[in-house]
Image 1 (cartoon, rainbow, N blue to C red):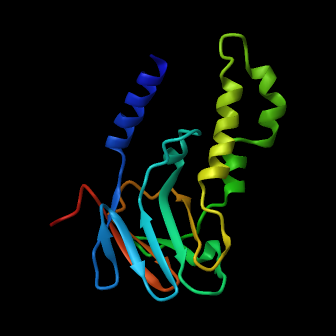
Image 2: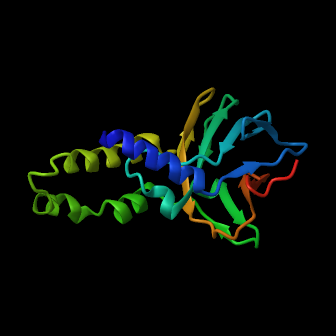
Amino acid sequence: MKKIILLFTVVLIISCSIKYVPVKTASVIIAEDIAIVENPEFTFAIENRYWIKEPDNLSDYFTTFFVTIKNKTSQKLELDPSDISLLDQLGNQFDVVSIDYLENMLLPDDFELNIKKRIDNTNPDYVEEWRDAKQNLITYSLHFGAILPGARKSGYIFYPKLNAKNFECRIIFKDNVIQFVRSDKKTA
């Protein structure tokens, strides 16, 4: 029953949240709200996707995107956090928030030391949820560094939460600009 209530709550929150959808341009292909940029060196796909795993409150603090990058060359493709920038409608630049920062903000180091003090016999799943949250951040976040020839990397990237009044944003990846607009403001 607890899981059904949690799932219903997540769906309700997501339905009320702001979602950005990509805008088709000459250099951007759109497939099911996913923006795709292809060139001889790489394929870059990005979607404004909500984080629905533990820690389940990440979308309260961050604007999240799911990214897939495929290296189409015979050389390693270096991927740095500064390669993927977000600009809001006023041109303010936001950089990718590191996984270390996320862990320190939402799952501080002293949490593990103090967890036994916070748990009583009525909530034995608390430790397991905390471990799941930490593991999810490691497993499902995009890891920067070299992408081997022919390989791909996928995962979530996190930016500071865009202002609720923000109408549009742009993702810039290696000089490729992808325009996004709020889904509730999109015109045909």
